[in-house]
Length: 358
Image (cartoon, rainbow, N blue to C red; front, side, top):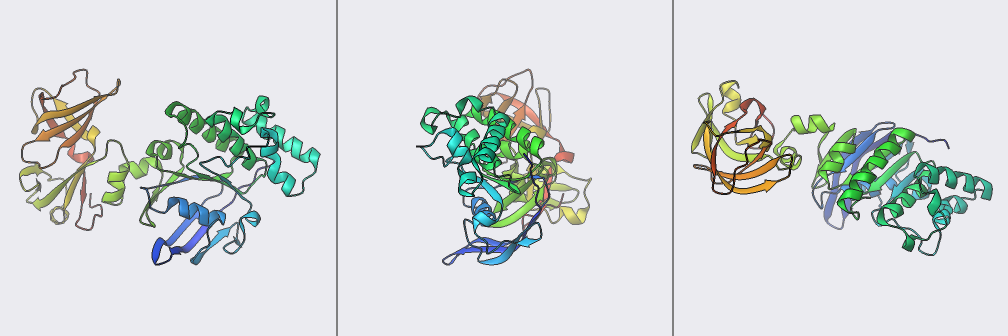
């Protein structure tokens, strides 16, 4: 079975529902063969953007280009893109074999070609022994494989996934995540994937598009996105537990956190320090010690995860608790105290507009 790749371009794409602007002038270049993930909070427009690319929603303004062809006004059937839905969208009265081959039969392929493509897809997805079953006899993971198989047989230019794993339990999500990654590595076709799950986004993507209120906040690889967020939204959205954000003001070679705690910050230009409005530090960049440090912390809550612990702590002078991530051999319980020292070189400073200064 031959597989295609596609470069997809979105040029100033807008989508309006009534008086509500859902997608606000999005410009995006999706590379041949890449695995691109849309991520963002509920209502950010990620599924709408996917449906615009596929043709299930009409573009209000702008254009969508697939391999140099303007497909903005083409129906979904003529875009050579395949959508995999969260709900699987299988025909309950058809066998797996007929579900996978349905689109090919509608397109007029002969019976021999349909059977060949169905068997190839079934083998790739390891569902050959399920071909005579009906959807009601399948598990959630098996149904999702069938939905993917139905997309594969069409040899599309790109696969579009709309939260395909959200209906599965945690263990099955991990398994299916690996299978989709392996599928992409095998067929090397462009894939666009929508999820609200950060773990899915970080582990599957070549690049991640972070969306907020219908606008792109940042497009980058997973590591760059985590280490070099462009603004406070991306910094706080990517990472679990979330980044600690503390209101701050610049002083002489230091930051005044919450108008109460001074933190030396001499390695940054004084001009930039004076622009500081928010100090950010990730939970894993707060070092714990029983012998001394910069801040004394009291444990409010402990979450044990086996290989690591998550603490929520309070520090005198700060109005909000801090999240701390640790894999220390010593475990502290609620009410215990220890010392914290922030890894200042790993911290972030944001200005009043939320843009990253450092």
